[in-house]
Image (tube, rainbow, N blue to C red; front, side):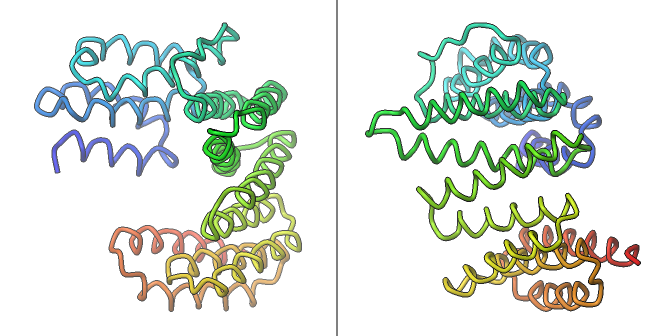
Length: 296
């Protein structure tokens, strides 16, 4: 693995828990590109996610694009990332959008990034209006691209719910999170696989748990578990279905039942074959166990 690849991977790993730190060191990646210019697109994708999705900061992304200008001329695969970022930047600035630079599914994802940026800035009403406009883009798509456009919309809903789950929320943002998670579930049911639906159930469950809706969270966790059972899901998927149930039970003030779910997660952890997935799951379990220990 190259130095820039490790830098990018570390940024993705750290950005949720240490957004200021990742933001501060993003520009350091450009020096590492000298030995591996082909990784420009990966760095730009990380920058777009940090500056647009998590910070709603078009000016910071503009500076990144300007710094990348010389390399962009030689790394054509990064141009789509830049075009997507520019659409999101225009939306965040309330400027006209040049939709001709992107195919419709990518255009929808660019809108989704801007929706997240607005939500991250706690501009909830604007985020909701743009999300509704984004849904209209997908619903009005020509038949030839409607499925891909709808998948992009489902991903947009999921990404918004995930973002709001990880940051401090106003009451209005909490409702937007729940609405986005519910739309993700129904939209993936239209165009996705059982895995998409199961993961959408998971997201919907933990969003309700985060809002203190234990009974609603448990309903969706049970649906997640049922989909896993019906499709012989692997240990990784079942691990997170049990996490959803544990969080639902904690939200419903049933600590003893939650502890039984976390024990099932512990048993499943050893069965997760992929080392990276197992390491990630281990961190998730540790955070849950810490929450359980603090719960009355």
